[in-house]
Length: 220
Image (cartoon, rainbow, N blue to C red; front, side, top):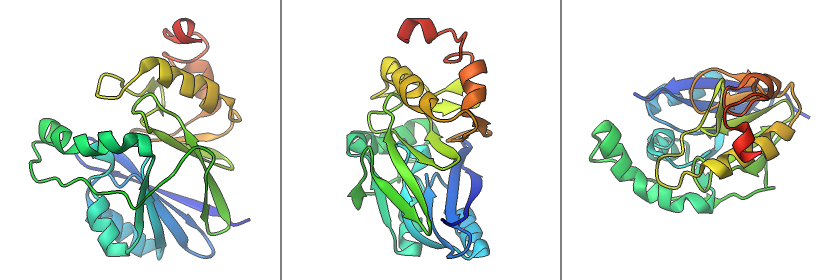
């Protein structure tokens, strides 16, 4: 088994986290959530000497896919989403205009689809695909030995919004409590915005879904 490296790059007006995930020895890697500022991401990839094998979305809101087009062209790789987020991807153009005033954004077409239980190899490491709907219908978490990329499902001290198209608070709660909180407490959470946390900390202290969280009784 290889040693996996994770570079977090915060990009765009909405301060989204993009992650370069790669094997230390082979330098094979992938990008999780290409949220914007492609040159910033390209610079880091080149600095680390990583060969990008694919771009994977946790979900298809515009602030997590804005740089996909340029990065896919630069690295000659493919872009993967969960099929249930296709409509979210189509709508991302109007969301980008509404929230950022971007009228020229052309949403990237996916090259392939991933689903619950799929495994993605990164050098000698494996990321397991976990379908965790709620923030969007096709929200994905990527689990590896020691951590999980949660997208906008679960944050340090917060949870994802469900007031945008396709959001579902009941599904979001189920995804967190029945799937993410079943992972080991020491696993690090790598969210779509903000700092990292751990499963154990969020199970205990998250004000929404923790042991005494304000939403816990309604949906558990």
